[in-house]
Image 1 (cartoon, rainbow, N blue to C red):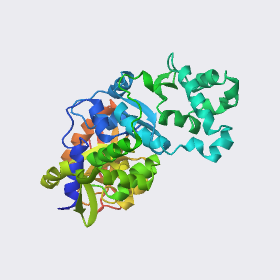
Image 2: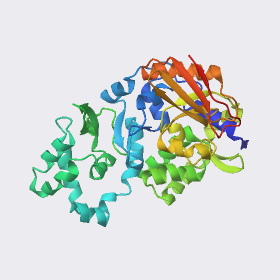
Image 3: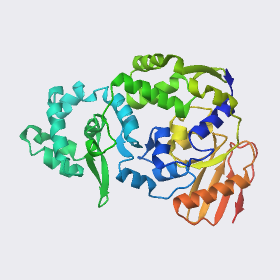
Image 4: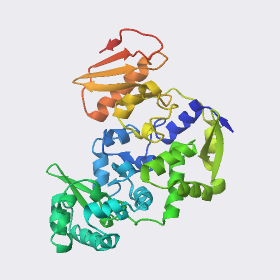
Length: 378
């Protein structure tokens, strides 16, 4: 089956609840995307822009009642995930067992045999409720065996990440502006880390379900570079899925999609829908900013730095930002900026940010097909 990129991106926009929007709950959106970055951008915006009805604070509320969790996962950064998706992907991240590397043993003066006891002490410390990193360090270093770990435990840094990956910790509510850590086991929706190979197969399915059609290189980028899953393991999980995955020709490149989605993909028509997304949205992070079908090369530096993006038909066509009561769009698309669509998205941005926007300024960039001095509407 041959598919062009316009049709593939239109289908993917549907899978991302970008066209049409989701009538479901916050956790439905996050589950589909697998993860929503919490380290940059605006998770409330990223989820809200995909829902028919949304209120700022929906993500915070879902974190409070356990429908979502915030953890260290992809590329060592923080993401908001459902407990089920977190279990799958943390299992892959933990499989690298970074704490057993000689550099870790030397730097932290811990052997692999020390970790079971250390993990138990950490779990005991958060049993009664969330702790700041400093409070966690104080509780753990009360044990003479781990007294030297105070500096490492008191920072939200590398040393704490394995406790997330192994399912011991997640982030708790912010207290007086400071992050807290709490027990993942206290979340009623948490079922622990699944078997590694089961998790791997489910992770491949989850990626193809949201980001297909995708190449084997995309899977390696997402699960290999993102979570440290080895290439052979990823290839094995893909092979295990057998007939559940089908290959399609996407602009001459062999790409993969779940068999259950192939018919729907083939029937999808290209669309020109315009959407405003926050910086580091999963629309661009999922396939990676190096994917030229989504991010034109000339816009990659800005997208990588975290500029808010405008997509048209799934392709990044510009960037946007709000200053005071003005929304400024730098349009790079070959076609003229679609005034009506930009106005509609401006209203959406104002609602999602809870800000007043009185004026929209649109400027064509040097990468556009033609130049002008920009337009201003109020």
